[in-house]
Image (cartoon, rainbow, N blue to C red; front, side, top):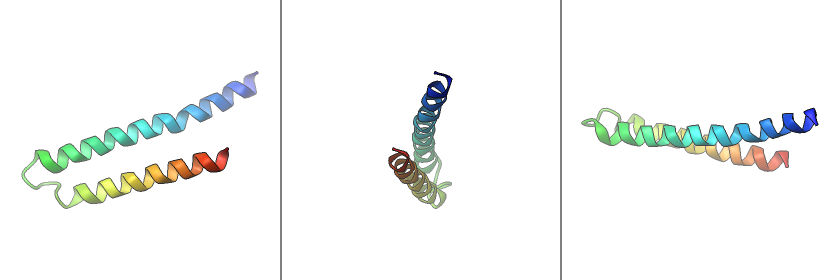
Length: 65
């Protein structure tokens, strides 16, 4: 039973990580459009990095199952 609980915690971690990545994506959108061009160059690069992390997360989840 303890081993099963440990697996459940490990399965919940990618969900928490995905939620944090989505929040970071919304923050980067806010930085990109909130200020007067301050993050217009770094905003798209940061969004691309977040999308790459989300794709990597999905691939790692499918490989574990």
